[in-house]
Image (cartoon, rainbow over all chains, first blue to last red; front, side, top):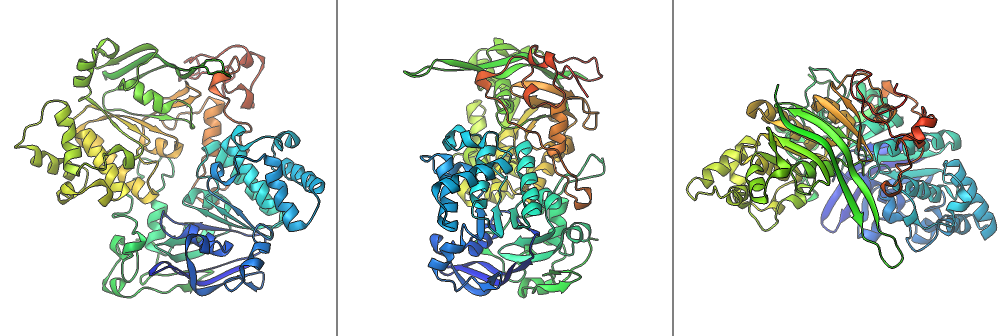
Length: 316
Length: 317
């Protein structure tokens, strides 16, 4: 459905993304996980063709969506795709809705634009979609303004907007970060059901390994603008090969065992201005040797996945 | 074990003044909260946004004035203290704030931020300040070389370490930690948590740890208070105690396990937290509770230890 190969993005002289590759099949959920500044959201923006908005451009690599190359697509064609076959759910539902417009027209507009249907038909569709998102009294909600609703409800409306034109691929950029845990559980459950019912493909971008563990089929772990490890979710959690993935999993409190001890990863996430030479993780890595400071490891395939490390292997 | 902090029936009412089109309204941000914090213990306060956990932290340090209730710190009645006496006492009780970016004055160097507490307490002596600052920085795992940096020159994790160092400057006995890791990346969060664990053991500190992250609280704390709309609904004496309150059970269910083999179908809680301004009578959780019966909608349950530990529920699990 979606294949991203060796994607590189630059803002002027700065290259925050250098070498991101992954593929996603129909009906699959792919998790992109990483800490702040790792390039997760930029990857989403690249797929959605929204980079020019922030002054970025794709300098190398390709993005193929359903057989179509997106990196060379003219803006007019992209407009048809975006919101139509490509849906986007943004992080902050408080800012992604127009505060001056009622809910109904905001969701209707998507279907009217992309499916070419009348206002009445679009409203009927909107009400149906709001219903499937378990929003109580959808017809009444259409006449409300965003400020009259809670954060969880607003995020459902944003999802409704993304679904209005029957997309094939949904990109969700941290859809639950701004929400409380019980609401997060509702939204994640909802997305999971949608993927199954509509055979959607979902790219779920998150910093939360627990969310990935609970929802995704495949995982891409990003660090400093690179995809450093990827594979099926079970393999990534059971036998991570990259020291960063191992350390990241070790940072989450798991349960109540007395022996468990959180250590964290020494140092800090590099910012785009000071990406280290060689392997970007080497200053914080326990396995780093001379070669890691000099050459950047390339993404090498391993059993049903890939890892970019000079010394991959199970944790000692 | 003696209690360092005793909180009894603490409440805080906020009033919104009316306007031309609005009646004045009142709500309880914290409602009838009581608990004991023994010396050396770590108590976690957990709840969703708006449940009053941060207000509770500020009430305890009297950064805002409680409406009713009593506060005792090491036997002293805090509410009877004059502002000057309270200021002296705060040397013993310090707070670490959620957002390290706004908790440190951007125009201050790290040194200046760290000697501020001494200046406030009138304990500042010119000669020993540098020594004191480098000791504090070493204690929180920072290089003393950072002393002359400004906040914008260091990372978020380092800033939070400075926030902790500043809270420790006067060697307090109680540290109130208000979501100290909520704005940090997970790898840095784990560093800060392990630093706090080490300081707890080395300095014999007592913590009140406020967080929305139940798995973190269960990992870090000895006891847990679960809050919902201003009230403590359950007080778990051990982190692995059997959960009795349906809300606590839901919170536990909503917390994802970081393990794909433990994937489960969760039945998410329907509905949302009601507005504190027009709370329904009875139990605040009744509308979302799968176990609610008629009494839950008429009578507010009080904390009762009839089932082992304190639970405020008419139909506990």
